[in-house]
Structures are given as C-alpha cells and as structure tokens.
Image (cartoon, rainbow, N blue to C red):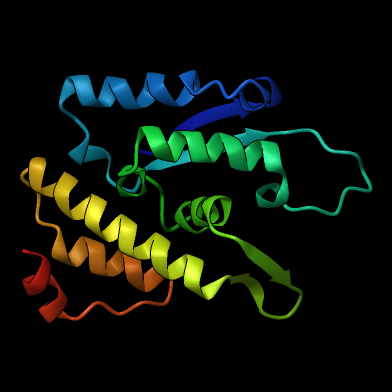
Length: 158
C-alpha cells in the first residue's frame, strides 16, 4: 500500500515538515515502520511559471525543505518507494547534479559518494536498532545509485 505525503508551496516555503511528520510519526508510534518499507511517495505541488525550465530538484526552496526533512529522518530512504523513482528524486534533492538531455541526471561524483556512504552508515545503525537485516537492503539502495558494496565492507563496519 503506497503512502502519499502531499506537499504544497506553503509547506515548502515555510519549511513546514508537518505533512511528513504526521505520517512518519504515526508509523513509528504504531510500530508499523517495517511494514511500510519502500511505500512512501512525496506528492509535490509547487506552481511554477510556464516558461520555468527547472526540474523540482533545481528549485532552492524545495531542496531546502528536503534538507530539513533529511536532517529530521536521515533513515527515510528505507520508506521511499524506490520502484517509482522516489529514492532517486530524493537523492537529487540532496546531491548537486546536472541534467543531460541524453543521459539524464548527472550527480556530482564526490558528493554522491559522500551521500551514499552517509546513508549506508545511518541505515545500518537504524536497521540494527529496528532488529531488521540490513546488508541486502543497503546493497540494493547503493546499487540504485551505481555503487556496489562488497561483503567485506560490511565486515569492516560491523
């Protein structure tokens, strides 16, 4: 079951996380966080001028809202709907990038590497606290962004 969090320009411009907090905190309080793995979508309604060519991830106000969300819930990628592209979009909100007409999104390589490693450490700790296996989940997440994590790496951080 997909969970959608509606975001409007009012929420974004005022850095109001309450739409996300309401949904996420309810899942945490009910102890149902594990059952909603990869089911969260953020439905962004942010009006732009018709001639504004920017993608949502290129709008500073939206990126700032996502930075605040990530600071509040650094393990949020666990909940994001990866199949619908929600995790890749989330990453674009937090990692400097450019769009290429033929190749799509091009992340800054160093910034992406730092982002991936930070998420690996955060998710490993958080999943461990939730008593959930982490290695295959984290490897899958990293693979979405073009990284292969060797089993030896997990031995190193255990």
